[in-house]
Length: 393
Image (cartoon, rainbow, N blue to C red; front, side, top):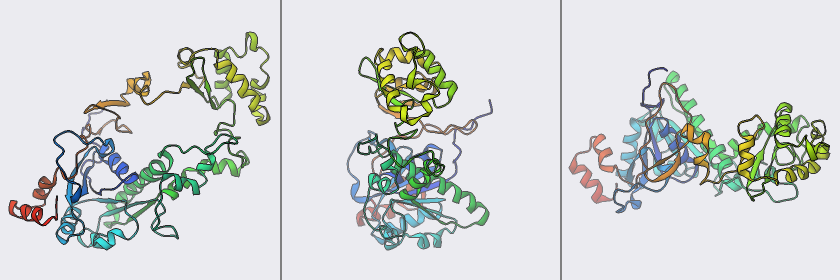
């Protein structure tokens, strides 16, 4: 094993996050998990007496917080001073808000030309809906993604906020920020990263659009290979009312499932719609679903799990959030951990030489205000004056 450096691959990168909701904070958490020094700028009015207990929001872990009144001149100057020594700014306001506050891209580049300016919105920085409100469900609705996530003849099922906010939003913002950081090392100049949830979600749909373009994905939701249309890529109820998911797409994996479930022996010796040749015919999928439903109803989820999990049958129990941390694979890898009394997922991905230390617990707004002001060179008298004026919390 190579020698490890417990500082993380983003050690030495400083990121200033203007506090917000949803995808921007999640992106900041991911960057903090990777070792970046993330400073969250909270609103001065949100500071209150909370004691020493960590903030309950897991997404807020791994950064320090300074509470600032962004509408005051002195507060604005504090943010610009932070940005003068930063590599990245992350903000999730509507277009034009930071410009009106005097901390737009040009304001920031005046004090730090290398700054990467990461902007997270739903609709993007331009277009007819850019200034309007929205949420994950509205963004994935217009991209065609939500329409594609449904059983045939039923309404779409919103996939929590994983697809839009976090997948099409946070992860694309992180990719954009990291790419811009690499480019800035060569050019010496920062740039705006315009991360829009609609753009990222549409980009995530390219795999499905490719299948559709090749004729492998008819325009009928719930009748396709990966959307519960196929009998061999679906969820089935077991004898105890719990569920199991199967997805043996490759022929050899499907053959393994047939063998282990007993579908090819005894009472099921006549495979019918489960026959490997018949399964490629979408017209037989409904019949195949009925057969699989009957087979999986014979045993409990635990019994099926013991029978199938160590094979290539591509089957897994459908676990609850309470059960997931106890799954043997996730437990062996430490995928979930308990920190500060809260079960949460560990940082991902993992690095062989530069793993990041475990992130600090989430803090309440303004927890590090004095500490950060001292780092900026403010004297005790100046800090007291800033507090008295309301510029900081």
